[in-house]
Image (cartoon, rainbow, N blue to C red):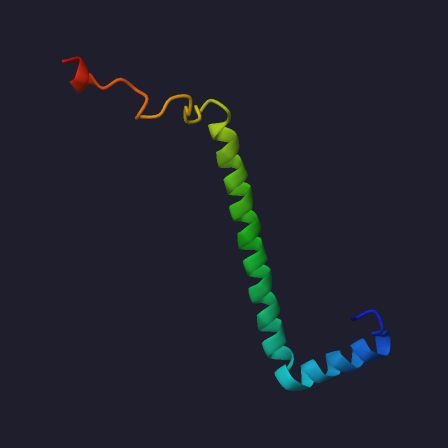
Length: 77
């Protein structure tokens, strides 16, 4: 779809975008996007560190028996 776009077409698109939004608004949008990416990366790193701290020491759920298969204490009494 975009394989036929050359450098001249990209330059024309850039000029149109600059004319519509202006440099100040584009600069603000760029800094907002950069801040969002930075926040996303820090959240991902924090999640990885938390996962490493938890490690494999946590026990997974045991699905060998279900509550219906377990003997009831009321029936034994």
